[in-house]
Image 1 (cartoon, one colour):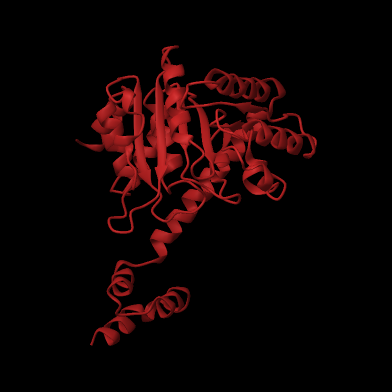
Image 2 (image 1 turned 45 degrees about the horizontal axis):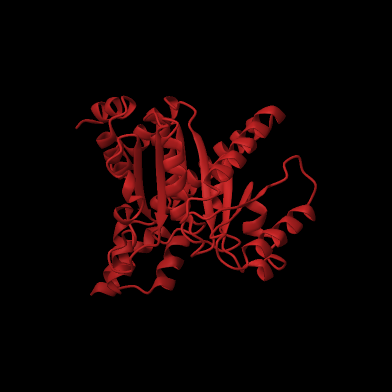
Length: 316
């Protein structure tokens, strides 16, 4: 399929074209920038929600419940699920085959798992581009599920309009020492697995933390939910909808959108620089052990004209 045909099929809502376009962008195949530029111009204003939190909080199960709720209103839902990378293949460790199984045959749902590939921040390098593609393909709602993150890995706030932080019961003691980072990123807090002991205490600790936070227009609500029992899912989405309404009524949606655009630009610059600065022969020499990583880094930051000669000398 030519680049023009792929773009045309993507904008027509073809799911296979979307999957193919994501692969082009993720692997940075020829024409990937042109593809993203076309998708950017064709954006339709999809609402974006980031689901983040510590490992084991039940993010995937919560996302599965949200998909079911949204599909009951006929919303078209795309999910970008970021997984840890396999140390052997570099691919996704979990994958969409074991996520959200009941929605696999639903034409109104598109789920794509992406390996983080060592990218920090809880997302994959190409996540923001994939969100743009899904928007251009006609999805109303785009849900971004991050890999299990720590308190400084909050890159999702630069991609999603609303960030939902999912926390398991029993995390209350850590709340008092984790007021920076992950907890400050939350627009909505969800204490998941609320059927387990300690959920009410964790919710109370979170509420107290929010009350003691810096004054701002939006006060993040704390919602109790049990994704496994399908309880509280409507409350979670109602809190997300309320946050969206606040952004629109206060005018903060404009400044937030500008900040996300700038964040996407900075990520694009960073990725482009990494690709441009590391020549293929140098990378190959590091992979094979011909040159140690520290010498290679010095060569890259120093005199680039000497790279080929040093590689040749070390290979001899």
